[in-house]
Image (cartoon, rainbow, N blue to C red; front, side, top):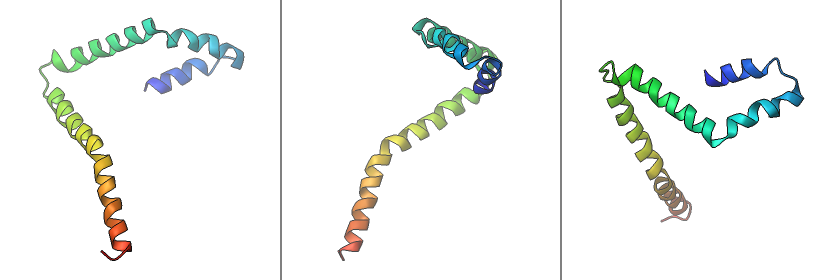
Length: 89
């Protein structure tokens, strides 16, 4: 949704105007305000309504994180198995 909004905003600009439009968005102050706004929206949508979805977010986020952490080890293991298979071990 955010990319669609951004695209609709820059769609009417000329190419020379785009860097001047995007440059303020790359400042630390703008990023901090955007993150704070996102956290406020999340709090209003899920926390204040006593929804169970934040628990799901933590569970699925933890599963994804653990998968990404274990992925390099798993790939090394699979490469070792493939190497052993190719050399008859």
